[in-house]
Image (cartoon, rainbow, N blue to C red; front, side):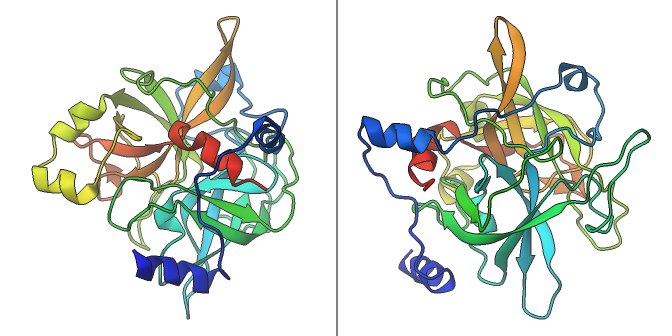
Length: 307
């Protein structure tokens, strides 16, 4: 663990890792004010259309985290989820790779095999070209350990304010009173970008969405050996479910809950981020659960680290 911390401090100029701190009422309100007034845009018509490719402006909080390895071009292998003008939520394992530096986030990218300087278009409209924002710092959870699933969450801060539009917008954080078990038995939306398991794989390169049938933590854990449970160091801060087939999505893809007002869907909130799942030839393994890091247990910690 000390070697991991030393690596982070050298690589990122001694950034401050997630720390548990206590805020008074005024401090808590100040942190809350970092959040946007509007978030989690939900178009009910799109919510029910059953398609696997998103609309151009659907899930506008999804970004692609750019990595740079020596002697290689930038690659985009993780999703970054926009929660404010300066901050994104990412899996911790995506920002602690000793062989690659997280450098930037692309927002507004619908077709990922298209040149990022060109506009993406569907049959009826075109979006502006994607926007690249460079990172100021990355902040993995201070208790995250590589090869473990627990606490696989972090923040990344961009150097300048993200300019919101119809195609780039933040998602809401979970409500403060979200119950630990309220997702069990639900079929929830998950959205992100497809996993490309080899360079010549003919992958559907659009931003994608599907459903995941959420199960209890105990049910998913029962399918693992005692050794696997020990090695992965799981906890109820995670949740799992069975993704309903199709192309596998990359780490950080967002599983989303829905805020209701007067019994009607009003907005999406970030319930969890994809951290681990079995993949066969680029497809979801239907017999194995996909694991997500829940965001609700870290809600206050996220707010405290948004400065």
